[in-house]
Image: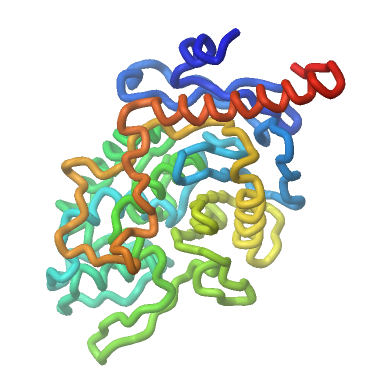
Length: 388
């Protein structure tokens, strides 16, 4: 079958993969907006990694219930385990909260916190120290969300956004608009709540969408900041140890975020983004089971290493087919500050990804198929064989 015929038949669909413990299969690409009313295709279980020459072996010792390695620029999922498995997300759900609410408030606007703003902060929540009766710049509240995973700051921002339940409904709608169908939002801060779930796929979608906003990118990449208190300021440090380089975990080379989390039901969760040699990768890890100290960071770092070694070699096993660039309701606020010498977000310019539907996926698939056909032709020329 010709490449043109293949792409015509497979537009928006699948890439061939090899599954560890699973026979070769096809992973359906997520539904486009036009397919929103169709039932989702069943997800392939197990570990999946692209079948292509030169792809290195996956790291040993991966114990997470679910994980994904994604080329953030193209949206190509390079490897995954149970990509759509629904699990409690803990504070990684704050990425969806930020995608939903962050563009609405200028960073330098000031809010006086009323006692009602802090109603309902869950017992045992991580907090940054927001105090009723004090006034805070919105930027300080977002630093409290991203660095200290402060549920108190989330409650205040949600109150500004129309209330807790309204924000949860808006987050749910935003998830569906982004093509994230595994997520059910019950508590905008990620606090353990019956029925609240997400997946490695969806959390990666939220991170990609967030990094399209320069404010999100700046907050999630901040290792340390000052936070105002009634007694002056206090220094706060990002709880993402790959970013802060704390507790025996070295700062990961090229790290740019994104968000970590922990609850009793979710275990440890992490979305890690790093950029090297012109490539940006996202790794999402949900609930490692090894029991090893800092296991979530070690497994994420190992997967990032694998991903950077695989870029340009591994063919995608699936693609993020929903547009993630900010729409008219999600433009960065006018206060956005530039984040590099050229005035660009760490996300580079790639953020009209999939704006035209599956076009980018077809280009990626075409390139991968052309590369494979070239390798097969070389094999034919040398030994007369052809592997199917």
